[in-house]
Length: 356
Ligand code: F6P
Image 1 (cartoon, rainbow, N blue to C red):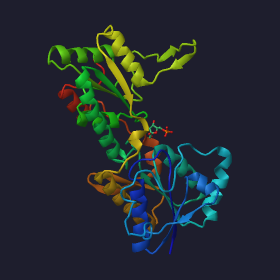
Image 2: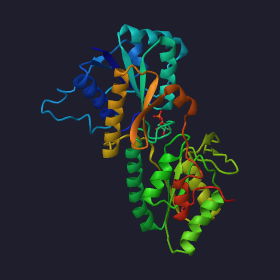
Image 3: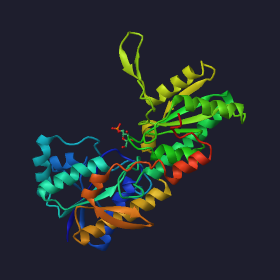
Image 4: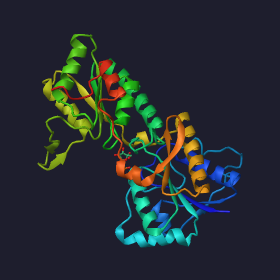
């Protein structure tokens, strides 16, 4: 029987535990392998730490918390290892006598682990996860669906307080260099404006949209969703001087809110919320649990077939595998400005950037 290692790397997200559960269940029940959980990704390998993972016995009452809990029972790190540690991390894999390693990670983590695997002759299989949904060659990554639902819930709540006070509510989302989270969440949550990195925006167009909603349609409030990586058409400076004269950098949500007030000569009352890491937590959605289960099972099957340097992906309604090298070369996967989602948002009257 094989000895399989599993780790979670990069920013956490809902569904990681469901993926670990699927890997442990399939590897032990179907193949009779031993599964070792590596804590804190490469740090666990560096310190040669591993815990035996058992499908049963996690809870005395037989309740399985793995399917429905957020975070990762293995812990994770969101920074790459230093060059100096690479040799020790590689040696850690061999010291643990692993036949293969399954890594659940985003594009950054998987690129680092692929490089270590090439250098250290590891058998590596990747599973994509990220609330940003920007891993190439997979239509969805674990955690994205739950994060979209969290965002939609926040938009729903914000719209009531916005409507009560006739305000503009600006909500800043995560997503790094990709706008998938903002675009999907904005369409589902009824945003009036969606700003994202792939399509530069103009603040004047944002204000026109807000005025038009008032003047033409009688909407006295508006919801502006801005992804953390959004950019203006003209290039903005988010620097400002604080009370002590120190130069500081405003967050994009704060910047957009200030600019809306400035452009409308403070004729509009605007407030900002930053959703931040709330999007990374929570109970995984049914979709994420299913995705985590099928990708976890698929990753174990790849190990059984001795297919390494591969990542399991979701494409055209099924599980496939693709080369990890190709995934890393193509990531991040960004929003297509001419795609159906952007066109749909525009058709629904949402301002999604450009025009001026
Ligand atoms: O990649 C996931 C993500 O949540 C991004 O959306 C965000 O930019 C980043 O991670 C935040 O990272 P950290 O957890 O290090 O603050």
